[in-house]
Image (cartoon, rainbow, N blue to C red):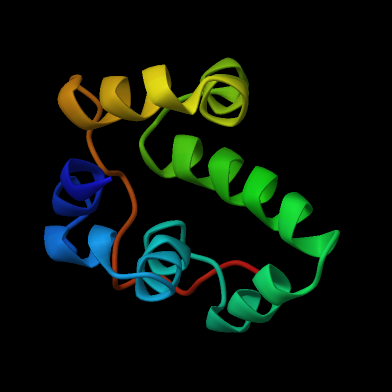
Length: 98
């Protein structure tokens, strides 16, 4: 996650800070900051993780198959995202989607 955050223009050290790394991931995925609340609701947190994986794949220019890989085999697909040729396509100037 350190390298993924670095590619997205965020501080890499944020990946090792609990709760703050989720906040940064939400920002990288261009979702509203109130999504952090979803991670404290038992079933909603599973849905939020899946939606963030889909959004993360999207902002790095990957498709639904790659998003499924991030969900099902994260130990393989996060390093592929971090060390592969994927470029962050999101920007801080655009407004986040709901």
